Amino acid sequence: MRVRPELSLKRIVLNSEEVLVVPRYAVVGVGDVIYRSNGRRFLKLQNGTSQVSPPYRRRVALRLGTRTFEATAKELDRDDELEGYRQLSAMHYRGDRGFGRKAVLVLRSRHHDLPVVLGFVEVTTGFLMNRPRTRVLAAGFRDGSVRWAGWGSEEMRTRTSLVCRISRLVISPELRGHGLGSILVRHAALYARSHFHAGGLRPLFLELTADMTKFVPFAERAGMHYIGETEGNLHRVARDMRYLLASQTLMRTPVSAMRARGILQAQRRYATSAALLAEPDGVEPVTRGLAGISGELGTQDYEKYFGILRLPRPTYLLGLTKSADRFIRARVLELGLPASQPFRPEPVQALSDAIVIDNLTLFYQSSVERTPRSTEVQEAFGIRPHSIQSLVLQRLHLRIAPGSVTLVHGASGSGKTTLLGLLAGNERVPGLYQEGSVTYPANARIGQFQDLDPTRPLIEVLADGRPTSEALYALNVAGLSDAKLYLRRYSELSNGQKYRAMLAALIDSDSNVWIADEFLSTLDSITAITVAENIIKHVSARGVTLVVGAPHFDAFIDVLRPDQVVRLVSPWEYKVLTAEEFGRDRAKARSWHQGPGRD
Image 1 (cartoon, rainbow, N blue to C red):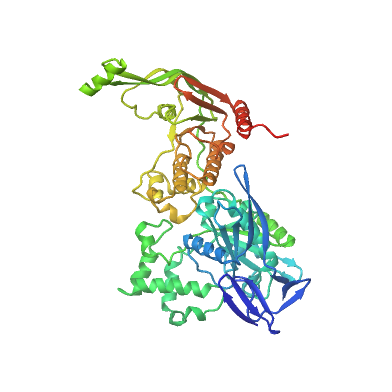
Image 2: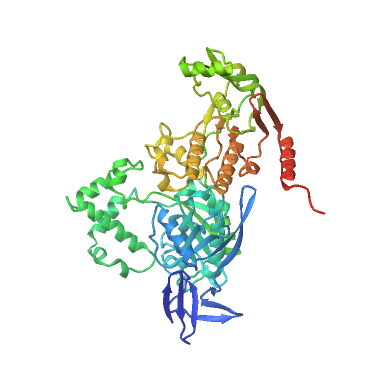
């Protein structure tokens, strides 16, 4: 057998000189024995078979708001998918440090307004050591020809290939927060059951260790079981580095010559990082500094020892067969392992009563500068010589119930911005006068979708005076679930990401009334749907009262589902429509635009 890679594909020349074309990352190579059955190609393994071709491919229906898009979860086998994978891969905060066998599944879009690759997941060989996994597997197990009484060093050496892992999972930045991560985890499991293998074994377990699960429970939504946190190395890092720096054999061994399982490769990386630190003053100052590190890392410690320190990380496990999953479920109960508890902020206090606008009239009163030309215009049109009054809104009556969603709709100049600014308590524009009243309940706390500080990293803006965990939670649930984005400035974000950052700032606040003018007006229709869906999800979950203003709403109205719509027609004419009345009006408008039907 000979393997010839060609961009997104590789050609396998079998001993019969027959050529088999498979995806670039298909887990088949020199030494594997392939056989044919019912038009498909398989590998014979110690505990079953692994399919080589056709490659993994499943249709997926993605629901964004009220719209459904077709996509495909599949092995990467096209050049445009390879390019999309590489671009998204560059965004991942850990980079590509895989070892052993690696398979890549992509979620390919079938819609022209979406990226070709919506996200990807990598399935790779399992690490030899993982303390939570060792604890769970340390009991009698049997699945067909595979069995053990406990999980000791011999089982680790000979059976670790029964565990494959998700090494990286990345979603396109504009589509985060909509369940695509859980979809990719589920397809990674299906793929691992049918197509993955290592060490002559078909995997029985799928593992995931990820910091992001502290804030977004995508693994549990895909059916994985939380089994604890990895150990990290803060408590032993000084001892480990002293040993590694003294291991001249390790330091001289090329990485390419190190055996699979990843342990030696990882040790070599740690030792290389430590050796660089030790160059000026020797080993002892480095190990003394490491010995002084506690669980709380300072900024200087983290920067200095980056590449050496490993922090504990949540771990999840999924059985890929019925018996394997029953085993994990039983062990989780036996060990009394708690369900993972991602950070959750304290809920906000809902409005105690309605916001009431009673007989509200707004108008501008401006004085006229006395010049020859202004006098000429006043005389020509009979305008009073001292001032001009411009009506903005007249005798508006409106009740905004706690927890409701209100849309203020009208053309430019209809008074939306002035009304929303008044509701938000913005500084009064000079010359604006008010008659009538706006009454808030005593516990009203107003927050606005407004631009953030463009000069500091997002995490600094949101965590200003608050715990970092709260800021990270807000950024993640708002759809900014990328570690690199936490460090970017607001001015460096796309329009969609800016809206998510503004949402994160509101989630991180104790505001119970959210107000947005020009709601989603700078976003394309797909991004508007995804952002609106995320906003409404949090408004509903937190009991927030939402008031938005927009000249156009077709892109997001079916997701927004307002309880009432204030239609500003002119300064003296408006309508307050219930959801039902607004729905009937929209149906009539659609019918009018379509025109009469043909016989």
